[in-house]
Amino acid sequence: MSERFLSAEDLDLAELSFEELLAWWDLWLVQAQCTNDLDEHIYSHGVFRVEPGFELGPEGIRPTPARGEGGHGRPRLGDHENGPALDSARRG
Amino acid sequence: MDRGGSFDNAASNARSANRNKNLGLRPAKASGRPIAEDRLLRVEHVEAQIRFPCRAQVARGRIRGAPLGWKRRLEGPHVAPRIASPALPRYGLPGVTIYLDLTREFNAGSLRAVICSGPAAVLHRLAIASKDGDWILREDSAALGHVLGVLARHGARYRFGAPLDARWMSGGWSAHLEFREAGLRVRTDFFTRPPRVSPTELERMWTEQEGQDPPFTDARMLAEMKKTDREKDYPFLGELARRMTEPRDRFLYSRSADDLIELARRYPELALELVAARPLLARIAGGRRQLLEAIQLEMLDLMEQNEVRLWKYSAASAAWAELWPALAREIEGLELTATHACLIQRAEYVLPREVSA
Image (tube, rainbow over all chains, first blue to last red; front, side):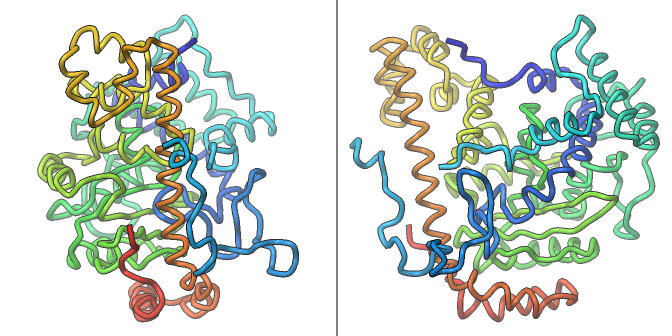
């Protein structure tokens, strides 16, 4: 069983000078702009996950179905009062 | 739980998109050439394929013959500033260094912002996997006002989130702003109370990062912030632990059964001492398989804990989210300072400052 955590490409970063690192980061970011449409409504850090009106599912992000259209909608005050189920609690 | 789906893995998506567009990116497989040379060739190749000749010239010109070391202040010619003020030294490359340039602007005169999360992982040379800038800010009105002023000069707008104000930041909320510059979408995420980081650790960070350029969170704090509900963050944590030099830290953060078994062989008393802080260390004696299982279960527990934490913020901000579409229309076209004042006025009635533990 391998206990390597990152790819060779990632591990290569340690070999770069600081300026090379910046240049590579720069290029990576330019390329990554092509995914802007895919993550337009989501957050990568902080306490928010999606913008209002959207929800995350197994297949990615989608507009929140309006209530009464088969969707449960965005969490609202009073919904799921006990929060998500905790498997860790069940395991003790 | 978020298993790190492809929609928010920008690196993977960028590679996929380039493949789809037949841009001809070479795989990252190591070649026989020295690593830096191989990467430079890849840089040139990418540049040629995606047709950024000017950027390529800049990158090549700066890379070659520039023996600049780790965390050393960059010297030499700088490109013209992207904005008129303030007159701060630039890192000298367009693009991603916007995040480092912004950090200097945030910290002009005194330390107010420390880079964390994804960009800190880059600066630790773990991986390049985040398009956004993330900072821990000092929790005082003057510091937050300065940061907001910098963002206003860049033409930033608020995304849905908490106001960048100490009253909400002190409750663990995050603020999110965005602007466009040089063809890039620049997202800026802010906290003053990062999750799982104690006040003592935070205070130590401000002391240690004073005078650093760029200032960024140390390995332990980055590791704590990587204990998210996203499975994809845990490999970073595992590699980060291998970069730690103190046996105590490696015991507390390692995600390798082999590494932990070896550490316990070398420091058996320390392993016992730290069991209270990390219960899975008690499983070392049970062998590799038991330890591997415990490592996986620990990850699942941490993911769930973060999921619960985020759920609480989601529930607490439900009314704020309900109000946001109308508010967004109201603030559209306003200057950032006016937007900020408007958000605070509304948030006072809708967004609780504290979220119950």
